[in-house]
Length: 171
Image (cartoon, rainbow, N blue to C red; front, side):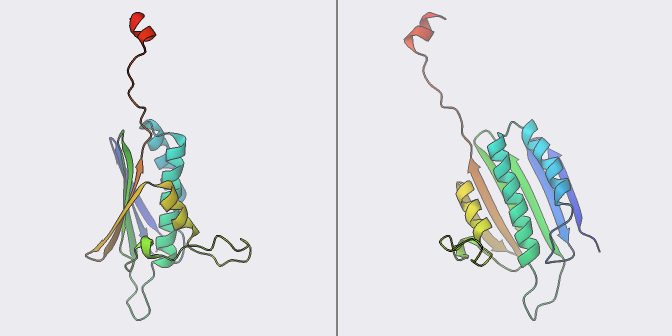
């Protein structure tokens, strides 16, 4: 069965779902999600640096779910489901992603090896490390068979300032 994807937009909220029938493989329609997500972020006034952070996070997290979300040995195989939403407000960009893979709190992952030669070190951990450096807050929970990660990016809001005496005179 091929991977299925659905998504919808509501004002400032972008919703998506991936059904991953073949754990271990990246959902082929991630490109369709990205081609819909990026214009949404642009239309809602998200700056390109912020949009790139969201794009990197969605792609990295879906790849991790597809790659590492397989049932553990002795457990029954099941179709993986990843559900996400991106909430845009003037203060924050919030990515909520839930999936039914085995429990995994990214904060418990060992740190990546950043000292060895990149061509010689083992693969793994760098994507999550990058996400923790891109986002300002992270929360995790596991409930009723679903991992839920909430990644928050505090937005750069221009500070309100008082007008200078010269600006006051020109009014």
